[in-house]
Length: 317
Image (cartoon, rainbow, N blue to C red):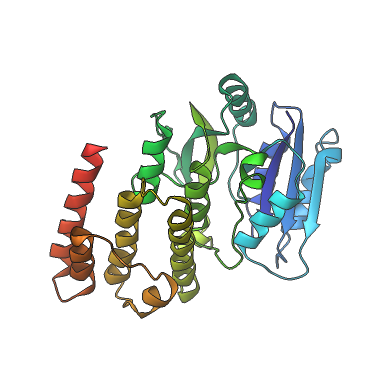
């Protein structure tokens, strides 16, 4: 199976060399490497091209595509999917890197299981070194896994560290939304898992860098708040349209209440959430929790009530 490795490039001159060497040094042979330069202002692309010279056998497998304007991570990831030609695809952020057998291990499990998506273990990298391996969620019940994703902050919704069948995106019309450059993982993973059969490997297949203070996960701005709300709106609209029986209504509402909780915790008010998210709680319990999170109820009390409901729900699924 040909696998496309999809890499956005922006402002990573300190890290791109390490990332590229880890990709070109993969033990899996049938690879395509697609990089999209999102108008990076530094030497990232030059460094990437220099590293390519160290791996002459890989050079024919590499494509570097340049945007004519900066588009943001959501649009870049979608362009990567549109441009790639592999049956399988995997996302790698250009400040992160892979262990040598990462793609080999994921591809072997996909071939063995016939899964649409294979999840792997990962390690966090700081200036002090790499963490122990964070193992993926072990359950094989896709419906339960999707429910936990929707409820938010229980299982990881990361896009990286997984191998996907490309048709999982294309056959089901799953696309990233331009302008959603923060929390985009959540808007994609929940929709993919509505259709996917999932498997996993415990071995580490990804090194996630916590060294880049300029990355999206280390910054907060009005743009990121807007992306956060838009991402949740994509999920809310998708499940409203595609789950008329309400199989996932409870975890969906728990997740939407988490948005209200986050806005209250950050002191941001609810005007933007009302206009961009448009969540209207259904059922007495969820209306009460929403009123507590939005109203004059002390935040600690409202949060305690919300977490208690989420804990009781989780014990019952």
